[in-house]
Image (tube, rainbow, N blue to C red; front, side):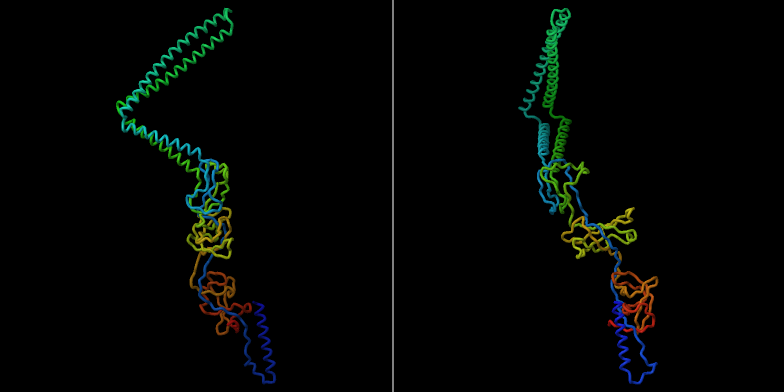
Length: 448
């Protein structure tokens, strides 16, 4: 631009010289009537516009909701139901683990519930006559078994006494040298066997007595009817069995890993046959998969300590993703970290994208700017019109003559800067011309 202006000066000088030559032969005009030379300049009018103050930022695309999924129960992968990168609904099954053991546990728990409920129903309604007869017969049979067991104990104890007497006799003969050691060993073996039979008979007697006591209590209960404490105990057993069954159902359900919310699956690398470790040991390996909310995408950026005081939640922002740098995406400040990193002195800020474009992926790079202040309808001039320094000035053209004015500047945005005082709307300021134009210089505006 400066070269263009120098060329313009040369052209103007040449034209002036040509005028001198054409004027030869004529009477020279008096020196007092010679026209003064004017300096060519370009100008721009001060105008009103909206200006903003923005903080430039860069960071990483992330999601407001991301879940790492681990199995609650260790197991082997039976089926993989989705592909990595698939969109899934909330609660959608992603993969299933082998649940044969858990299904067996549930069947056992449900059988226990049925048994407990049947016993409770029996106590609540009482027994029918034929059922009473069955209970009485069981009681009588249990008593007979006790008597039989007592008889068996008496027989085995008698046999033990005979075996013990024979052993003592054989030992005495051995000391006298009348029998061999083998005979004594045989007697001792018969004694040990007899003692074992006594112990077995006594154990059987205890079992028979316990069964008889239970049968007697059942017969007494049948005669007297269910007591309140018996009913309470039966109801407690039903509640306990149902709780165990509920836990079994939860364990069976846990063998299917599901999406906690609608989103996109990433990092799913499991195949049938893989053995997955439960979440109790999640720190030892990678998650089975991750699910992120692709609608609630954000950009996590850091803002330095000089600008962080300007950033507030709710402020607008514009972001350009590395995957689509030509497409600006509107965003808003969702969260400003209350504390800065002690090493970088910067604080984390999250920008929520209003309408994430197709292909926006967590982990990719983004840059943008946060609008921290907006001023509408203020007077602005081009930046090039301001002669900077501690006391900035602009050169205003009035009646073809330069006026040098001190100005107070406000916000700057792009190629314009706000003027708080010194220039009024519509006044023309020099944007191109010789450096250091002084006040009173006559000029020619060449860009009108």
